[in-house]
Length: 217
Image (cartoon, rainbow, N blue to C red; front, side, top):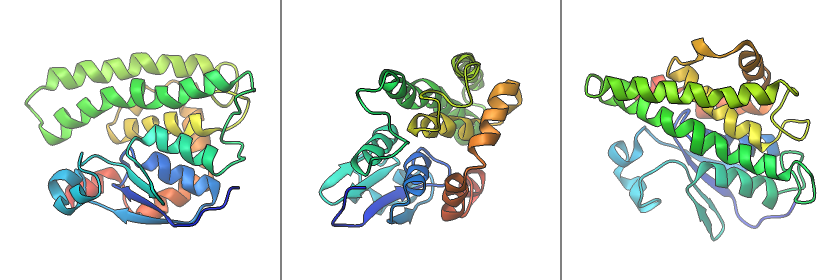
């Protein structure tokens, strides 16, 4: 593991996208300072805009490095603080698949869920048809995960990697949105496998609550 000269800081809302880097930090056993915020922070935590002018979650500082994209932060952590089995090296045949799954979790799976979250929890009754359409979009893209799991317990490289953190968060959010009733048996078993990991449980404990509690607080 490479040395570092400053404490990593992570700004996080319970079960938001920032759960990805929080989970990665726990998997890597790195020390960090966690700043817990109410969701959405740009509305409920005005001072946060001084940290991240976009007002989005997550935000991470590591010395002079500032990042705000969850999958990119995970990639940064597992490569900057490696070597780690969470990363797949460039020379490995699974490197391309690893990168693809790492970003698939955010760009393809989490994006449609954000619209379900908005129109079912923040603005109910305004655009239910949009929420329904994007819920179906998410579920149709989830079939790609099902196909991958036909070949092993994890998405690539024959082991748990950062790609599973990225996609695993999308499954966590799906459970919060009550989309998990349509998980296939393989995806349900995958979810149970990854959510039983000590680092996942430690990340959940560190945040102290889940999304539903945060929204009602």
